[in-house]
Length: 95
Figure 1 (cartoon, rainbow, N blue to C red):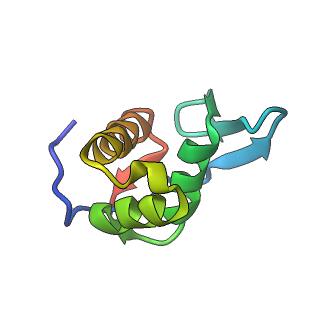
Figure 2 (figure 1 turned 120 degrees about the vertical axis):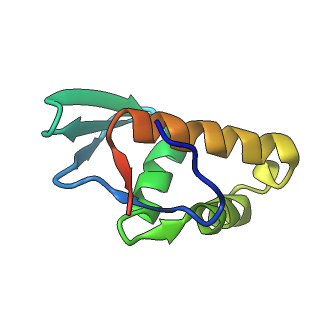
């Protein structure tokens, strides 16, 4: 996977289908890979933020605003790790 910077623009991959499950978990189906993914509420929130193209720094700021615990270096690292995972699973793509 290529490296990205805070200016990299991400967007939701095409045709992703989501369904809310119990305990704040979300099931996401990616028809391109024919795979189901169980996501946390945070991961699902990030997917929703990427329905419109957004820069990584914008995504991180929005997460920090909605979840103040992420307003620290470790929080930003965790958001970046999650973005990498979503990209690797094909749920997000660089625009």
